[in-house]
Picture 1: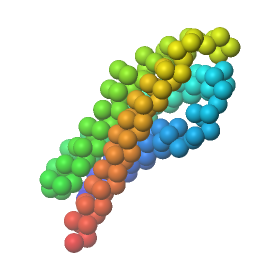
Picture 2 (picture 1 turned 45 degrees about the vertical axis):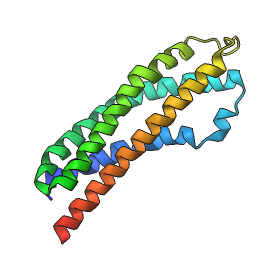
Picture 3 (picture 1 turned 90 degrees about the vertical axis):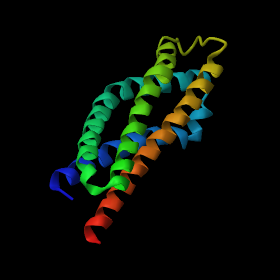
Length: 159
């Protein structure tokens, strides 16, 4: 494995791992789902602001690192190349899902007054939560693909 391939894959692992861990936390934090409406919406709005600043550069850098890793993985054979490309496609799918499904819901929630929530706010929260669950699955799968690519490439180098 080349130094550039190893470095790009490690950067991708780090950034996609941070992303997957961040979105996974929301899934495994049942106390958040039990929060009363006003508190939940304040949390949601704060999270939207933080993630809105952090995620675009993190994901763009992760995608760039995965593109480099995918191109350089070509020489490592189809299994390594395939799972690296799968990771890239999965992360791109999370971006598309976020922009097309989650962001419109976030924009609606960001405009709410937490002390005067609309009657349908639980339905919108449910919709966001379902979409977020899919995004989390995609992100964790992408991270797993990068781990598999690393293991396959390492096994190929050692063997």
